[in-house]
Image 1 (cartoon, one colour):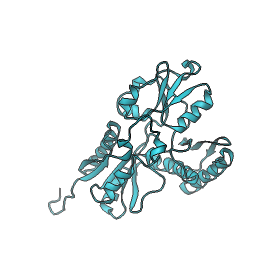
Image 2: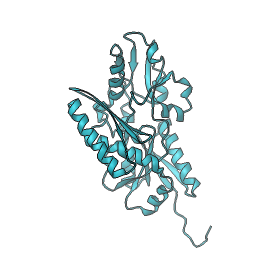
Image 3: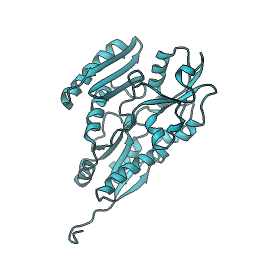
Image 4: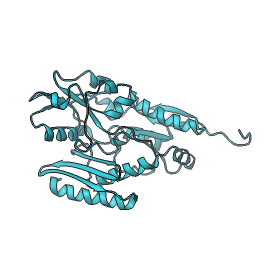
Length: 296
């Protein structure tokens, strides 16, 4: 170490206190420490955490953003230097003064059933999920199924599998907590299109903090940034979050989209070029077509 070089204080990482959020923040901290940057965690309770009631649907208490606003505020008011989020929880409009400094490498983006496999569910069986997207996709595949609300942290949800039914979970969430062995079936992402950014961690920082911007650039995963940026362009054009049954997923150079609305269901696969601006325009055009079909 150069004795004349000042040592910056540890980067303060704002995160929710759930097991999944802490594990994701730990991955970010590990990446920063590997490049010689010390870190410490700042635990933040969000509105979504304070309203963990099964009977209260997520979209009714604010939808997308209920797990992110307070974490972002901790960075904006100087209590923390970066905010770590599940990218699927992050609204497409970034607050003034913040930027997404890094996207972590994407883990498995798919959804999974815990309980019974889809083809093993009897007619009228119950699926528990708080996601309108998952309900719409499963109802399209199996119109006979019944759905009930499900919220809470992951261990709580795994204790609430309906009798002879299933719950729907993100594979990445189960993996990071070491509970993927409980999966009954992983759902095909071409049919059960994942949420925008699912399986990815996004890290925000202040725009006017160049030292932290530089540190985050060292852990940014550019292929994931490109993919999630295209997915977020689709969602931004729709102007919708958790309140709309919408999915978008980039894989192997193809954007797959899903939107359900009052007049129909739109599904489409769009070949991408590898250029973020051109592909963002393709995503916007796909969203316009989806809005016409679905009536959103």
